[in-house]
Length: 302
Length: 302
Image 1 (cartoon, rainbow over the protein chains, first blue to last red):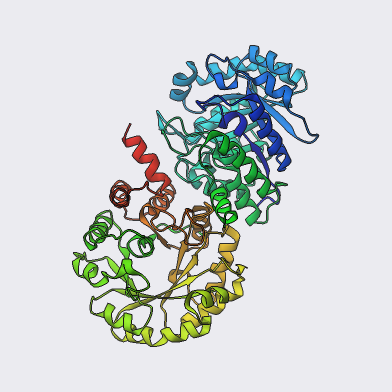
Image 2 (cartoon, rainbow over the protein chains, first blue to last red; image 1 turned 90 degrees about the horizontal axis):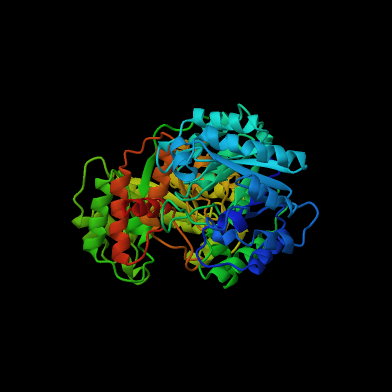
């Protein structure tokens, strides 16, 4: 399988990255971050979540953020919609894509959304239907496709089962997520292979956390299977809620460096991306989670 | 090329990791670190350097450290020897292997050891000869095989040239080192391929720095070429002298996690290795540079 010559990156920093942030991040800062990401060449950005502010207060400004973004043609703005009510609210803000979600681990599904995997996906069916009817694309985030904080290893069969349910309700493409970052190359390849029972490789996104430092080797392993869509978070925003102080999302800067180093096009300007990461890291008052950003900012400082 | 089923790791922490450490590390602490590494299952450890204490004061206790180690059978203890005088001193301490070195970048060679690549290797010829005559193995560390802090990209032809010189003077195996951690998988594969003009894959060690977070993807790329010897540093000891505060050596813990996750044997007990890393990190008073150690120590702390 030849390695893809071009990769599409989806920056999930504004949503997945910031959602667990304790200190309030003003809408203006989120909007500025999105502007900087698109100026750096990102053409897919996960902006916010239409979930109850009771559960995720950081995303309570979802409408304000969506309204404040100066949209660029050719950029896809996606939002998370946990239910029909959230979808109705999201619809008013004209997202290009909505994201529904499910876990490959039964224990994770029960602990986190209090229902079985099958029930959770069934509940999304009307959301997906409504989105497709409105001409909005639908992505399905599949969490815990390699490991689960409660169950340990997750069998590829469970990933295939979840992918099948996603396909049934009309989801157009799926994220194969290693939510707790425990995956290594061969395990990640098995999760992708299982997903391919229901989705072609062009409709699979890799979403690898860097908790154990494995995200880039997993990215390489996925590239070698022909996967060319990946999610990452600028400055590595978003820690790991299952291991305090540990790394969560892989940093977009680190993925871009890997890809450019391999001669793979992304359309992204790494220097501008590092500036975007420095902007939000400065706001949050902590160093970037990106090793590339650290190395290049050190070099710039001389 | 099938991926190797077993990998041999060489921990360079006690030497490469500690040599630039500003605070004095007592010989007893170094000895304890070596003991903990071998208890964790490491069977090759780079112990110290027989270089002038004027240049590397941290290694002035080389004889004391070598004498203090309770050696285990089946473990290989190596030392760096920059010249014949150093070799003579090293010989008294009965190392299993000596390490000579050279750079693939002319600019790096001139700046760091004030002579051309060819001259630097020529000077090592009598050291190698003396070691082989004494029945001691000889490894050649080839630095800057992918990138150089002064020259930028280093051409594979320069790596082949250096490997050829190493071969000529009798070096038995070589390290393909990405000294500044700028490499990505395809570039690293080209450096290894160039080295294979003179050394079989069984006599090539990968030595990848993690400055840009790429070390594990480079390790995967090397494994895919059949390389099964790698160097790493417990707790990621040894920063990058070319980018202040940046990461240097890849952490042994992170490499072991990758390998075990892929079902590759190392003979290493990851939990004991993490304890060894915690021991030296605690002594140095800073967090481990290993993401795996951080994640697992967090989990242990509950």
